[in-house]
Image (cartoon, rainbow, N blue to C red; front, side, top):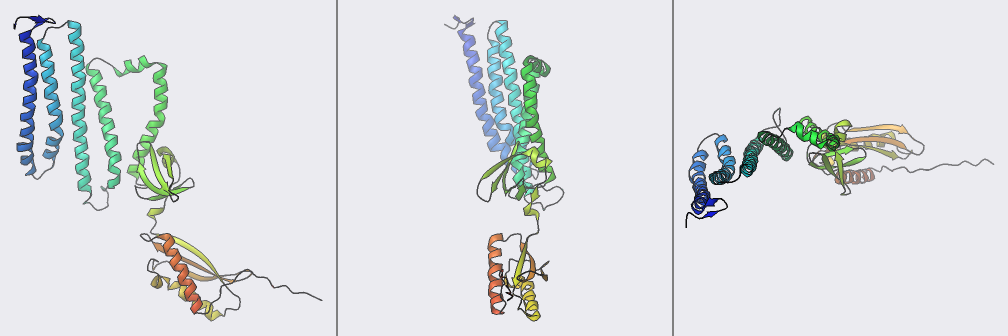
Length: 350
């Protein structure tokens, strides 16, 4: 029975190959138990987090690697044509290379996630990175790791990158030209990250669009405008042009022109200026510094007051402006100050 031959191999040889694969699966069960019951509790007791990262990153690629090695060993025990075995061995080299690349990608991801957790406890300074940028960092590093891993894997089976590009011919040139814009946007995204011109959640103004930054991707940055529209901007445009970061201002500057009637006496004009300069006591969202209130102009129909104030960064701009306007209306009304409106006196000569 065991001596019968199927596809060039005896039943005994097929059973041995199957036993190797089944044994690898059982070994994987043991490996998972060792990781979960022994290694994880052991590394959790140490002060450093590096060993925890290694254990967590290694577990799944190791189990996959054991199965791949067992299948490769089982197939190599069997008798097949030389050409078929060459193809099988090259295939397993590719799978092994991808598995090792997966290991490094997991390792890099775990390090970034650990760095992100530590970064939450840091104060803003030289080594501080906004936590909202970590998804972009993670995506960039993973892409780089996989590209390097695939290139090295192809190199191991005798495929040269120059050969691939040469085989592509004109198509390769077209791909390279198309990739220029992609690479330009990727490097621009990294520039945005390192330059810290703006971050996720900031309100920026660019090319007539003003809104909140909701995503900084590998190629584009998305902002949500005040009318809830989504505007997608290529990253290179943001690095090549002027971007106004409204969120970075210490407070929103508001300039107002108030016109009072020409029958307002000087004492009342001075009282109006005092009311405006005291606005930070009347509306708490107004900053107590840099308030300007002056008698600025004799206009055609009014005597003008220029009022400049700043709204606190955390306050709602439109709500605060409304509060200030209502307070001016009430305070000026109580003081007997009358607002002017456009008027003209016509003298008729007989």
